[in-house]
Amino acid sequence: MIYNIFLTRKCNLCCEYCGSCRFPTNLPHEITYSLDRLKEFIEKDNDATIAFYGGEPTLRIHLIEKIIDNIRAKTFIIQTNGTRLNKIPKNYLEKISIILVSIDGSQEITDLNRGKGTFNRVINNLQDIRPHFKGELIARMTLSESSDVYRDVRWLLYSKNPKFDGVHWQINFMFDDLEKWNNIHSWIQKYNSDINKLINEWVLNMREHRVQRIYPFMAIMQSLLLNQTTKLRCGAGWIYHTIDTNGNILACPITGELSSFWIGNINKINDPEILRDALLIKNEPCISCDVFDICGGRCLFANYFKPWGDEGYNIICTTIKNLINKLIEKKDEVSNLIASGIINIKDFDYFKYSGVEIIP
Ligand code: SF4
Ligand code: SF4
Ligand code: SF4
Image 1 (cartoon, rainbow, N blue to C red):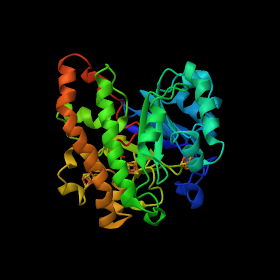
Image 2: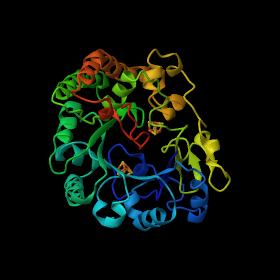
Image 3: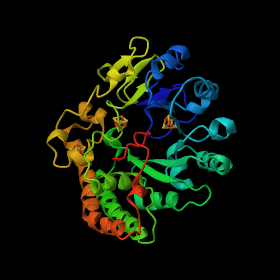
């Protein structure tokens, strides 16, 4: 299973869409449980992956070092805003398999969302580490009303220095106030048509033996090609567990204050196996949705909490259904490219539940 650890709740940025700096929390800023306890807990799982999370995890590099040195895990991942990546010593960076770095596209959109100067700091750090970071570097975008998915995804996809191995985005739907959107309907209309355009180009690229690692496309297409159904694709509640600073185990990382999402506490549970499948998508509209098996439900938090009500939920699902239907439309063409040896089914492989939610 994946253990996503809040190394601190502090962050050195205050992004437009992030509640953590605008609504100060009563949760402890720093870890209050012992690392010995964390070790004892995680090492009971022979298939453990540790993800460093926050706040901003690179504010606590000494903890990253201690955990890598002392706790047995198959894989280490970090989800970071990238502003301090250059501070991680090389010998620790080498032990990290996946870096998920927050960047929204070009300088204009990234600085608009994350503060002036952020883009250059992040890009400089990535240019610094890229020559000796051999793992997968994933650009993790947040899309807001100012974003243009076609322009911004392509900017990251074709960036040469640094080169990203993969791109993922999540739309700021239901994590923030609906009222912040001026015209969500026209934004969605353009988004859907841009997604169709991006998928067309993605498949055209395959004819040149290239399967670009555009996560929402790659993961859904893999399921279609293998005829596989899925549970919630971010893994929250069933395989991706977040350990909060106070030791609480959260079904989803944004639910530190919501007791109904607490599925345990590392000071109280001995065997992490009991966390498996702790909290599943059980509510409408997902459970009766005709694409539930392939979507998996977009978000556990949203499924239980419905922050934008039923109507808001339905509005955003139009984007998911468009994405899935467009990929279904392309399935035969992609299958033919595999059958003729131009691309390989393995090109769609990816490390699951790394922190990439798949359904934007
Ligand atoms: S970098 Fe992440 S945690 Fe920090 S303010 Fe931005 S979104 Fe929030
Ligand atoms: S498309 Fe919407 S309703 Fe359907 S499964 Fe996905 S999130 Fe749930
Ligand atoms: S997509 Fe998954 S990880 Fe993200 S907020 Fe929703 S449930 Fe939590």
